[in-house]
Image (cartoon, rainbow, N blue to C red):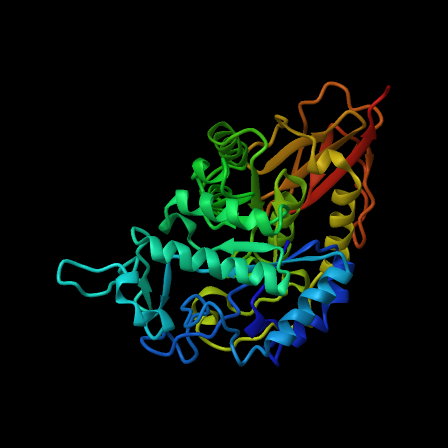
Length: 415
């Protein structure tokens, strides 16, 4: 999946500029585009000079700076021609203070004095919707059905979905499946297993990114990644899908947090774990332009040609291809392995009946040597990835990894 912030994806900052780059995204290996909100942005109480796309003025309209309904239809049609689905962001829990829905004050959350309030006191630029009112529910389901039916979008990413009752999402899914039985619905939520029982296909693995941040800053050892994964696996229904990300619109850029080679190592982890890997707005070139605050509220376009980077796009393209071509990565098991450098290195197998892939990633800036706790390593060969030299002087189960170094090995399972 590839998350796009249309305002900052290009200098033009519109939908047509996204359509113009669809071939590049297809070439990278993207299956699903997630567009951050494309609706008109509120002016009243806005943050920054432009305001947040998550402060929506009209759920039925397109931001005039982004283009027209025809531009959006063309983007969806051209994506579909290339075998890519389009998911649009829906901010169901709130609106801008100058929303068209303000004509219905009964749609909103209110305090004891009868004043409309935000869903969270820190979100001063938005007003909270009241899902105790059945009319709000009807309106929002009707609106989602409109985009699905009239535009052919393939689904929705639902911003801060826990601010809305899960029974609403379950009812919405039942209605939307009548229009498109294959509708994709993503929850912007972590550690909420109930959301994945009926309502959502995928959630955001916030626990994993939070653990990764502590590991990459040397606060915790690398084996905390396994602990975090195990904890989530025990919490959720079997087969639950989690969005695996290192970079998105809510965090400072991964290259700013981890450095370029650290960001690459972290994304290799997300591309080789189970779940759905996510790319965000130019990370495939190592763009370091701000995200979150201030980029949510200002115009800060991607810099598409930063210097001093490894060939990130080629590396990511090869890793995505590896993942797509081998069911062990998307249907197979994750088998965590012990190693002799547990503070720095994560080691695991991705395997199914046909293939085994051994993944070794050094999540520290130090060179580390050691070995993996795997009794039989016969037949493992390094996977060739563009721009990456194969391991020298070591054979699995031994490893020698430079700071943020990583290797992937493969063997066919003997019949």
